[in-house]
Image (cartoon, rainbow, N blue to C red; front, side):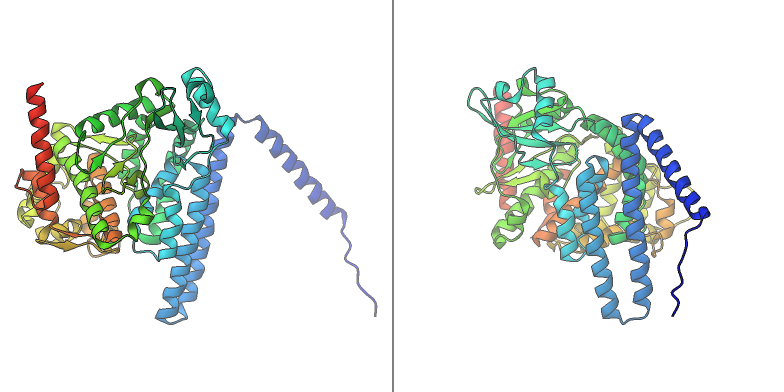
Length: 490
C-alpha cells in the first residue's frame, strides 16, 4: 500500500510567516502602550472571556435541557449555576475593585442558587488573593513616612483579610494597642475606572444566574458617585468616627474606634476587634441566630431612619460576632448620607407601603418622581411590583427564608415577568438604589439565619418613635435615655 504524504506548500509557509510577523508586530505595539492602558485592556479582556465562557455554557445547558425531563433539566441548571459562581469568584477575586464589589453584593442576594454556588460566591466576602508583603509595606512607608516595622511595635505581614479595595493586617501600636491596619492596593483607582466601564456587562452575567433581566444602570451610577469617596481612607475614617460616636456604649452594636495619627489617604488604622465570622453564626444555635438577626436589622434600620446614613456594603464579610452577643460592624468606605429632600421623598413612599394603600402609594410615587404623571398604570399593578420586598412588615411576625430576597428582587427586576410594565415606567433615583441594597442585603442575610421576629414593630420604633417591640428594644431605649442624659450634663 502506498502511503500518501501531505506536503506543506509555500502558501502554508507564507501564511505561518505572516501570522508570526503580525504577532510580533502586535507584541511590539502592545509594549508601546502605557502600562495603565495595558492594565485596562487586560481587565476588559478577562471580563469578556468570562462572559463568553459562561454564555456558551449557558446556551449548551439550555439546549440540552430541552430534550430531558424536568428533574434532569434542574440538575443541569444547578450545575451551570455552581460552575458560573465558581468561575466568577475566581476571576473577580483576582481583579479587585468595583467588579468584585458587585460580586460581593450578588453573593448576599442570590440565595435562590444551589448551596454550592452560594459557597463559591461567598469566597468574595473575605478570601481574596493578597498583595505581596513588600507592596503593602511600600504603601505604609509612602503614606506614614516610615516602614511598618518602624511605625508599629509589631506588624503582621500576612493579611488577615483581603477585599475589593484593600487588605487588612493585624498590628500593635508603639503604645501596645492592638489595631487593624487596612492598606489600599496600589493602582486600584485606575482599576476601578476600568471596572466601571465593564460593570453593567458583568452584573448582567451575574443576574443571568439568579436575577434574570436585572437592570444594573442605577446601581452603576450610584457606585460611580460613591467609589471615588471610598478610595480616600481619610473620608472612611471620618465616616467610621461618626458611626462610632453614635453607637458609643450601645448594648450590642460596636464600631471600632479610629487611630487618627496612623491614618492617611491609603492607610486606615482602627481598633482590633475579635469575633467569629458569619459562617460560624449561620450554623449556631437558634437563640444565637435570632439574637444576631435582630442586632443586624436594628443597626441597619436605626442608621437609615435615625441618622439618615448607612454603610452601603451589607454583606456578611463586614460583620464580626463576639461571644457576648455583640456585633462588630466594619467597612465605612461606601457610606450614603441622605439630604433632607431626598430622605423626605423616600419616607413619603414608605408610609403608604406600610399602610398597604396602593392608591396613596401611586400618588406619592408620582410626587417623588418615581413615576411620570401620565404613567397609565393601575394602582394594583404598581402595588404588585413594589410591595414584595416589604412583605415582612405586613404581619405581626414574619420568618425570613433563604429564597425570600431573591424572589422579591425577581418580582421587581424581571423585564419578562408580570410586572414588566411597571419596571419600564419606574424612574428610581440613585439614592433609592442604596436603600434597596440594604433591603435586599438584609433580606438575604436574615433568610440564611431563618430569622423570626416582629419586624414591623421594630421598624416602627425607628420610623414613628413607637414603644419597644422586643426586649432588645427596651435595652436600646435605656441606652438612648442614658445618652440623652449624658449630653444634657455636658
